[in-house]
Amino acid sequence: MSTSTTLRAGKEGDSAVAHWANEQEYIIKFTHQPTGHVVEFPATLQSFSDIHTPKFSEQYGADTMDPTIILNSADRKMDFSFTVLSSSLEEARHNTQCVNLLIQMLYPLLSSDGTILGNPFITVEIMNLMQSAISPSGILCIIENIDYAMDFESGVISHDNGELHPISLEISISATAVLERDANSATFLPNTYPSYGG
Image (tube, rainbow, N blue to C red):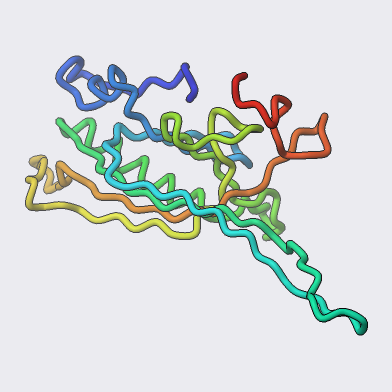
């Protein structure tokens, strides 16, 4: 996990949800690789699954009854959901902006003539849950789905100008990992393999 991550607590200070998240290190961080933009949420993780799926094919020769097994790919998919809470109008506005920016990160970076300048790869950090041998501080992903819902039963934060924000946001994300490989190694395995003692 990145040790430099600190959420903005705003004028609410110690009473802000961001202050609590900073103290507990309950922070979910998204870094947009083409631009370097970062979105962070003070988040309570609700669910997390990490699915690894190797895919094989079979080839039969004319002189054998047994197939040759060929590994075609090994996919890694992560599904997680979290709750984002706001304790003030300032926090609610900031969290809403973060959701909007995260959605914008799903699209490629384009030039003025529509040429793709950067694919929408996003590094996701969730405490120590999103790690690999190459990326101990996050996993490079393609986000396939973002589903966010406003929990109005938990209450709302309103403003005189008609502005309305829910106190609680529920966000669910499905992501597929992009395989990263150490430039100094022909394998993705850690240098200490097969030992995990460091």
